[in-house]
Image 1 (cartoon, rainbow, N blue to C red):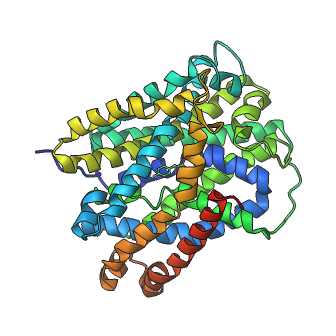
Image 2: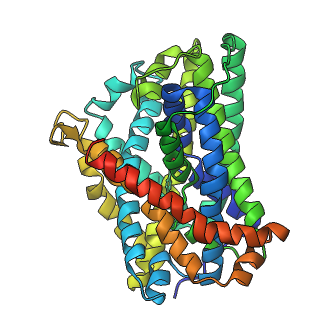
Length: 415
Ligand code: PFF
């Protein structure tokens, strides 16, 4: 029988949860979306979405983890409606399969940068790039092997501290070398900005599919879910803003239409001191690894329902991902693995994860239908706000789910 997994305290939980939330979404997706849609309007829309949708989903997800105290799949099975558990599991396997490939490119870039200076896009198509995910997979599996407290928590504490210090350092150097471009106050008036900001808020906070649920089942002490969620959200937003501000300063405030390649490509040549560029990629790598750890831990915890102990479940996960990530890894290689001319990795990101992220709202809202109001209010520990928040989470959140569902379907079949 496996030892029960637990965080040593609330701080350990918070740091690991911030590690899951802070990832490529903050250092890569957020800056490119902000540079495309305009920095200020995008930030305004993003912060509003985090406050009114992302955080309420987190309240429910963390509370549900504390109350049900089982793996995500087991919880839905117990509620006699197993599908959300299985669908979330499959979506998280898909997300992890390509997320690790991108992290693998960054890994290869970081380790080869001191020897060969090249553009990030040259690396992606280089023959060595596809193997990067194997290193990320193995590196991320080590803390999981040592368990939640001795592995994930201890590793996250060190590496997240390093991440914060490096981010501040890089920002300070960038500000000392480049003038701050003029900032114009514009409002987010375009519907598309709101939709992108809404989906970015789920992605960035890691909410909707049971990752934070799983982390909260390992909390042993009494805690205020409201305060914990605000701390996680605050750091996630802060790091996203810092990375975007960095890109804003480095690109001289120019709004770019370069899309996803922006951060990877432009930034590889923009730092006056090459070593600072390297540090930026190191930050990306650290952020990505702690997010991969949370995805793998979610998978391992769910596999344990099927008679595997923790170590065997981890072994099975690692071996499976060696194969599962291969299609994404080969999609930018000389093999050009693609479907209807779109690289497999892009299909998974855009059409599977991008277009289905709304499902998570319904999955989490479903859990709330099985939580008593007084239990929710007690765990949330939000004083007088408890009751209104319960109503918000139980009914209003569903409206956002429906909006996202309609928009995503329109997007899938073409506007
Ligand atoms: N929040 C992570 C990021 O911003 O990169 C990505 C992520 C991790 C999303 C885990 C969802 C998840 F379950």
